[in-house]
Image 1 (tube, rainbow, N blue to C red):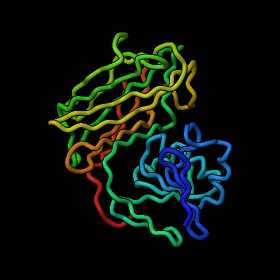
Image 2 (tube, helix red, strand yellow):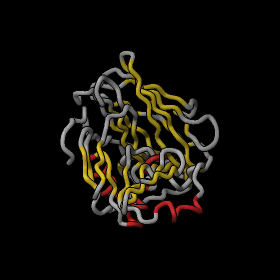
Image 3 (cartoon, one colour):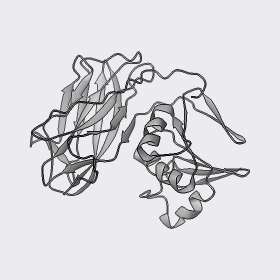
Image 4 (cartoon, rainbow, N blue to C red):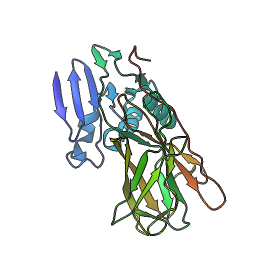
Length: 274
């Protein structure tokens, strides 16, 4: 066995005639020389992804399409990304489950961490003032909505960013009876580029955090940009089990009302992979 660290949480694992990439983040990884990309992905047979953060999963779909290696990860994320990017042979599994990849057995174990997936990439059109307002849905470990949780949305204080109601980079909202909180009144600033919205959820002394990436641009970069649901999802660990919430970025202008897309995940059951 040969294990090569590719920077951050990315590894190349060679076992016999198999090559497994773990959380491949190569483009923009400050600890990885992109001149070595070809060597890093050469012969890849499987791509393992622990969760949907961009610094773990961003390059997985592209490498899969380039090499033909299937992506392996948590069932909900794998199903979503395979449909989005047309991935062939993607393998979904669940906590406690084991999949056999040739001569390698991969078991998914529990870890406490938030996870977000950024769909096609959330684009704020600063010229036309069309924005993506985050909508967060928080559920407990039984999949029930958490009412009265405090959700803080925090944008950067400099560089590409946004403010709420034209004044503050932060907004705190309580979840409603459906367990949802909307970051209403968000407006992008005039600086082009990508930025991160820090999301903190607190409820009865428990806290969960996540990060959402958005981009300020002159024109939308996706053909789906007008009045469409952007598949922003946030899986937030809050409670004794792995409870899940959802972030849906609903694109809004003056003529429509944003509606969140919700996916109830709840506590992930332990069992055979699916």
